[in-house]
Length: 338
Image (cartoon, helix red, strand yellow):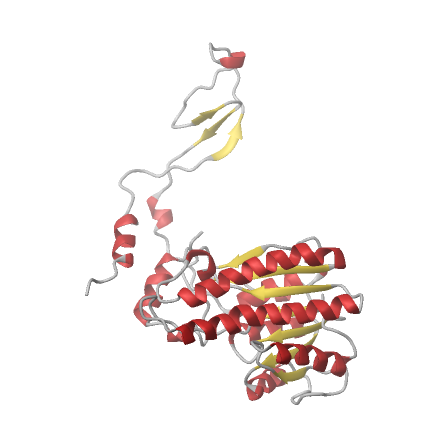
C-alpha cells in the first residue's frame, strides 16, 4: 500500500531558505526629478522595494533572531484585564462537560454571567457547575444560580426542550448561546461508513443548527438581543486527513453562522464563530504523539493552545465589547495554517 506523503512533502517545501530574507519596513517618500511618470525619482538604495510614491527599506533579517527559543508558556489571559462584562447575562453552553465547553463556562461565569451548562453527560455538566462556584448541581435550581442540563442536541425535540427548560428555570431566554458540543469519528474517506458520517454531522452541524434556531426563536419572540457563538475548527477551512466528516461539519458551522448573522442582525442578535486550531482537550488526546509533534512544529507560537485561549475569545464575542461584530470567524490557532 502506498504511504501518504503529506509530511514528506511538507518537509521538502519547508526546507531552510537558501538566501537572505528581507522584510518591508515603513514607507518613506523620496523626492527628486527623473524621467519617471510624474517626474518623481525613486532611487533603489540597499534593496529597497520601489513603488509609486514610496520606497520600502528591506534590511535582511538576522538568522539568529529566527532561531531564538520560543516561549513555552502562553501570554497572560485577558481575564485579568476585563471583569464582569457579562454580569447581567444568562449564558447557555452546550458541550459544557469538558474541554472547550467547560473552559467557556468557567470564563463566562468569571465575567459575571449566569451559566446554563448543558452536556449529553449529566454528571459532567453537574461537575462543571460545581467548578463555577454556584450551588446549582442539579437541574432546576432557584433563579440566579448556575444550572446543569442534559440534552442530545442532535435531536430537534431535545433542543427545543432544552431552551424551554432554561427559560422555565431562569424566567428568560439565554442572551448568550455557545455551541461547543462536538464529536469525532475518524476514518479515511475510502473506508468511512455512512454511520460514522451521519453521527458527526448530526452532532456537530445539525446540533449547532438546532440550538441556534431554538435560541434565536426564543430571543426574537421575547424581543431580546443576544449573541450566538458557534465553535468551528481550523479543519473546517483547510481539511485534515481521516476527517472528511469532521471537516465538512465544521465548514458547515461557519456557513450556517454567517447566514444566521445576515438574517438575525435586524433583531439585534449577533452570530459569530470561533475557529480553534489544535487545542489540548480530551478530543486531541486521541491524536498520536508523533502527529502532535509534527503539528506543533508548524505552529508559529510553538505550542498547542489551551481551552482557555478559546474561552477568552468567546467572552469577548459574548460581551458588548464586540457589539458591532457579527458574521465573522475568529481563528484561535497560534498562527497554524495562516
